[in-house]
Image (cartoon, rainbow, N blue to C red; front, side, top):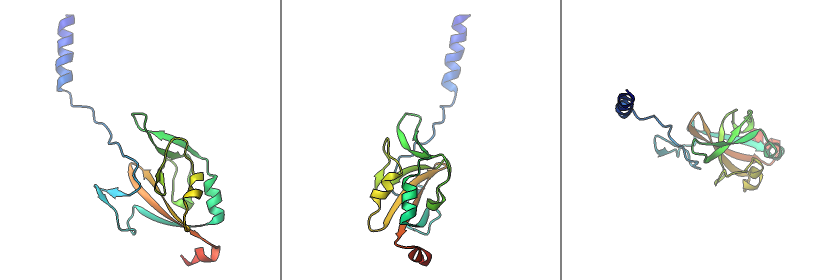
Amino acid sequence: MKKSICLVLLFTSGCAPAAIKPEIVSSKVTVTTSGKQINDFESEFVHRASINSREVNTISNFDQVKDSYDQFGKLVGLQLLSDLPALFLQKDDILTAIGKKVIGPGDRFSQLKSQIKDGESSITFLRAGRAYKTLIQVAKSDKDRSLQ
């Protein structure tokens, strides 16, 4: 009896379809869709944010994040625990890069301050498994911000 149960289990397990594994999305600074890089900055996957230096400080102090790992224990990025509308980020988005630097263990939004060069930077994030990018322009004053 024991041998027949083992044979049935062995036989049926070989016939069962392989488990479907979710695709691992690597942290890339560029935004791609269907394997092609998005060069059109008017794309739905690319946002533009204009913030002032005061907002940069507020965003740099944003601490409602936790490290997010894939099923193999590899860091994917920073998962947001609340919305950050100034950068078009929503709760559960996963920040994967700030500027050209891919997020590593222990990284936080405070790096955004050091990544802003000449008043510009970007962030790359995942939302529901799709990659998005926000291009960030730092306005020198509120007057500059209203012109954009």
